[in-house]
Image (cartoon, rainbow, N blue to C red; front, side):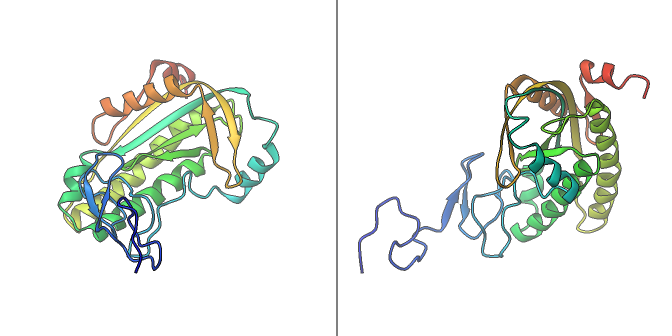
Length: 238
């Protein structure tokens, strides 16, 4: 036997768990070590649960043709300023929903939800920038530039609204869950950062553009899409 550090979660010699609780980084609530999602707020917990489900990769897996373009663009677009459109989608009342279900059931529901979100964003050649625990932030127009980035984001939002409405109907029938989402969109300028080996992209100067998109999402009614005035002007007539 050997003494472990007082803050250690696993034995340094044999790997046995020393604690049975993991603190959620989003809300601070304690969770069982084998959980994949927080039981209080629905945020993903770090690591991998005993169920064998790993946390989804940031940005998901882009289609092969987009991945090829990202690799080709690496080193040439970094530091460039680009006009983009940012899209936020989240589940309304995710904390209450997660409390009504067991952890495995909630994980399966959210896993399918994230799959639908990534597929919808990639369909219009957007990039999922990050998962927010109960939704996503996606960027259209960077690092691959598209002049019609606002229209692509709007098309993606409309497509997702239909897909997620059908998914909500399924969940209403079984397991009887009132599942609804909100969507917000804003357009603005960002500076492209580093394109990593896993094709993840870091952005700077995204604060205002993303912040207003997230504000639109928080104001949206369930099942609705709210867009900023700037985005509305860019898609006027379409």
